[in-house]
Structures are given as C-alpha cells and as structure tokens.
Amino acid sequence: MKRSFCLSFCLLVGCTTTTLETRRIPLGEHRERVPRDPSLPRLTADWVFGDGMLRGVVHSPAACQAVDVELIREEDVSVTTPNSMSVTGVAGGLLLGIGPFFIFGQASSSSYSETCDATGCTSESEQTDYLGGVSLVLGLAVAAYSVYQVLQGPQTEVLATRMVRQEVRRLPEDQPCWDGPPLGLELALVQAGRELARAAIDGAGLVAFSVPEDTRGELEIVVHSVPPALAQQVPVGAPVGRFQRSP
Image (cartoon, rainbow, N blue to C red):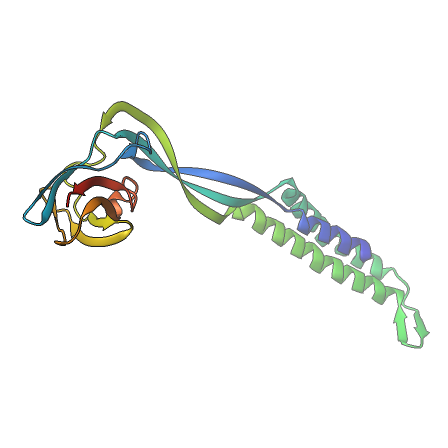
C-alpha cells in the first residue's frame, strides 16, 4: 500500500510544469513633441508697459522635436503546461487500477484463517481485499487527474502589468512645442519672490498684468500653472520674461 501511495503522489505532482515569462503587447504609435534641450526656454514673449498694465504676446520658440513613440504593455505571466508525466500518470493510473483485479484474484486463493491480537482478528484474504480496494481508488484518481491536465492545455495567469514608452524615431527638424497659443496656461508677475499679479493666456496668446502703482525695479514673469496637455513641455516656475520699471 505504501508503494502504491508513493507512486500515485509522484505522478500527481509531476503532471504540470510552470514557467515565468514576460510578454510585450504593442498598443500602437503616436507622435509627441519633446524638448530638444531642457535648458532652452519653452515660452517667450514681447512685453510692453503702459497705463499701469504690462502686456505681452506669448508664443513657443522652435525648441522641440517631434518623436514617434510606441506604447507597449508588458505582462509578467506564469504558464502552466502538462508535461510528459501527464501521459505517464494516465498509464500509471490504469496500471494501478488494473492491479487490484490481480490482487482480488490472489485473494480468492489466500488463506481464510484468522490471526487475532489485542485489536481484533483478521485474515490474509481480508488484508488482500483491502489492499486491492485502496489501489483501485488511487489508480482511478491518478488516471482521472492526468486526463484532466492533458485536456486543460496550457493555463496562463497574469501576475503584473506595466506600460512602457519606447521611442521609435525622432525627426531632426526643430519646431514649436505646440500649435497655437498655450490655452489654460497661467502666468504670475513676481518681484523678489513675492507674487504681485496673476493672469491667464487668452486664445490669441495675449496676457496682461495690472502692475501696482508703487512698484519699481525688476519684475519677473514666470509660469504659475500648466494644463495637463502641456505638463511635459512647460514646467511650473519656468521664466517667461523680465521687465524693468524705472522710478
């Protein structure tokens, strides 16, 4: 019985093989504009002061390049496949299932004389019948499980996913970082780190600040907030220009 159990267990645990692999699934390409040189300004403007207002026309210099980017989804997967032990399991299970018939045949010729001890009485024939029954159940279980594994085929489980950006090609020509005015972008007028005014760029690329009457000296215009569409092109705090107001 112990030998039958060990063989069944070895066949069961050896019916599949699990491997780990990474799969790359292309999701298509799209074109982006990326800064050619991070040190170059992304915004420039021509400023004019009059009637207490500082006005400017904001535009993007040719500081970016077009890049074709491919998006790829990477998946870490485990693949479980039946191996050659599955066929062995079927054969082994059938052998274990057929074996009991031989054992039952031997039981008919076994001695029916009983041997008694403190736990009770049993005969050689009863022991043979019990061993045959256990072998029959194990054999059928091994065969059924092995057939199930073969019919199932490879089983895949996704363990983790991630998105990867892969640059395909970069066009050599410099171009503006976006088309038209940077709608939704907000600028701030500051002096010595203190914000004096704030204004958004309109559809024509115009922006205007009301400068306090008593303000003198150098004024700086910086990016205060950026819409999501321009988040990669224009950092918050980027300088847009300077203006010197004389006493």
